[in-house]
Length: 189
Ligand SMILES: O=P(O)(O)OC[C@H]1O[C@](O)(CO)[C@@H](O)[C@@H]1O
Ligand SMILES: [Fe+2]
Image 1 (cartoon, rainbow, N blue to C red):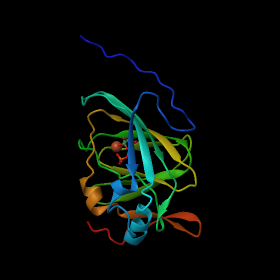
Image 2 (image 1 turned 180 degrees about the vertical axis):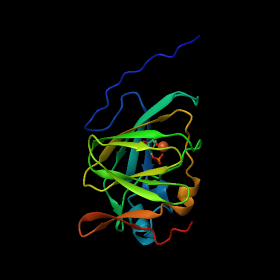
Image 3 (image 1 turned 30 degrees about the vertical axis):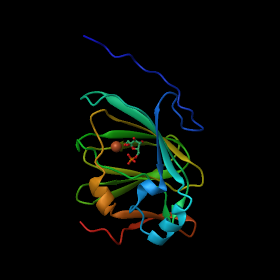
């Protein structure tokens, strides 16, 4: 039997960087069609800001193994909608996931395949359990980077399709300086 080597790394709790991890950058242009306000999107696209960065330590796809990744989700808005991650179901939809809040302020939108949504506020120290079958998207509702760790099965995979097409049934917007979760007017089951 060949055994894999254990890994121990220190996450930089200020920057979210995991030394030696694979870095992925998602700019606003990677999120075309995701935000409601298309005019505000086009305007902001001139600068094409980085919306989030992921530092991932991933294994080859195999049952029983685990991946982990930090995400640095920058503060910002497109119109009234706060910056968010794309959001996804798992390609193996019954795979669960754990998130842990490190820095900043935000939350997670979760949604069943039928469109039932839940919002969970997150800050440093918050643990979120994402049950099997729930899509998940994180949102930065603060003024500084929102940094968190995700731990997920190595064979979970990402299914971006239906979220990209239909979005979530709820939106997280700013209203009078506060984050508010409202119905998505464009949502259709
Ligand atoms: O994959 P998305 O929806 O862009 O969100 C990024 C974050 O979610 C994960 O895919 C884990 O669910 C990580 O790679 C990363 O932490
Ligand atoms: Fe996930």
